[in-house]
Image (cartoon, rainbow, N blue to C red; front, top):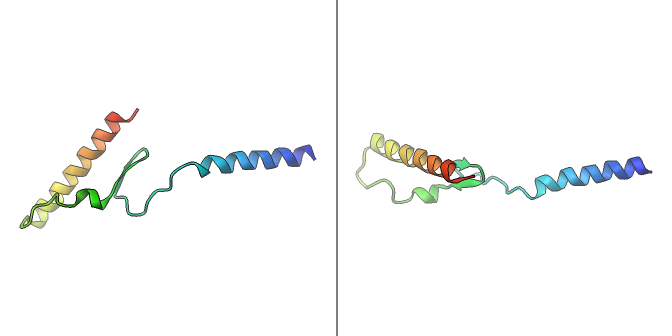
Length: 75
């Protein structure tokens, strides 16, 4: 009986650990630890009339800067 109780207790402890973790949003385009960058954060970033090459460069640089800042500021 103690063995079953111990197994159940261990199972509840393991299950509760993953219970408190936030779920990753499928829409997130970047993540640093528990901080996410969403497409809505990029709205208005690329000016109208920008070429595809310029747009990709602007967005890529923004994502890289965002990730670098979050990794520096996150303990």
